[in-house]
Length: 286
Image 1 (cartoon, rainbow, N blue to C red):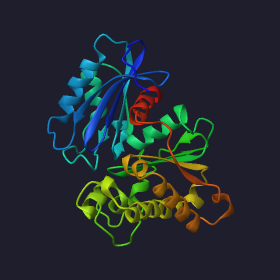
Image 2 (image 1 turned 180 degrees about the horizontal axis):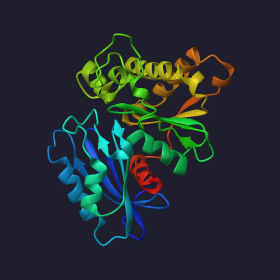
Image 3 (image 1 turned 90 degrees about the vertical axis):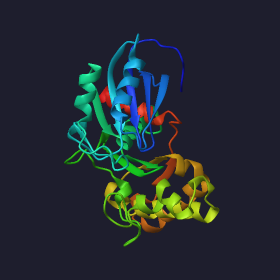
Image 4 (image 1 turned 90 degrees about the horizontal axis):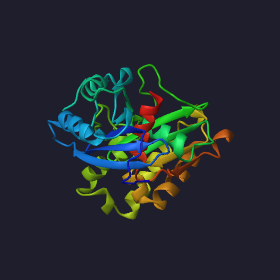
């Protein structure tokens, strides 16, 4: 939900993706009050642009702190970030730079991990304790909530479902491996295969993307023991029913244990503000 009004207090929310970054003020009830956008792709002054936009956004507003959702990997609670889809950023001390520049506390986490927090706070997982969040967009990312808690792992990067192997010895991935789900079914993979926008994909391609996601993530369900996988992202949501039907059929084909049978892939209900709500949740939880 978006509104132009500015009543305090807010969190500054910054969502940094591979092609764009959105900056906004978000109220505690999950309303986006104001927003701005910064181009990411090829932008060598990206950090300076983000800081300038954030400063402008917080003028004359009661802002308690900031939350940043960034493509991963994200290390040391955001003290270092090296997003695979932002090649000009490697080991950037993002949290410290933003705290120094904005003079406020800043939390930083991975973008899909942030979405899981938003799903838990505002979305379909309000009453669920075991679920996955999956984004199928320009890239593919994931996050896990087990027993009501976001799973961090040793380095804070648990849940990178996009780098499960979907096609052995398949296409080269940005992570250095081959055949990752992201290298076969993401937006950039589809652009490579189609020679154009994923939104022009035919019915067979849409079904195949759903099948790849369902089979690959479905093969982990016996390990994760979750209730549901909430899916967002322009590719999955843009492909609609053909994606979700194919994903659920493929998952059912590989996840045969009885406790996996009821697990489904469903669209996230957070809407277009989901990434910013996730970033704000990182700020609230940090």
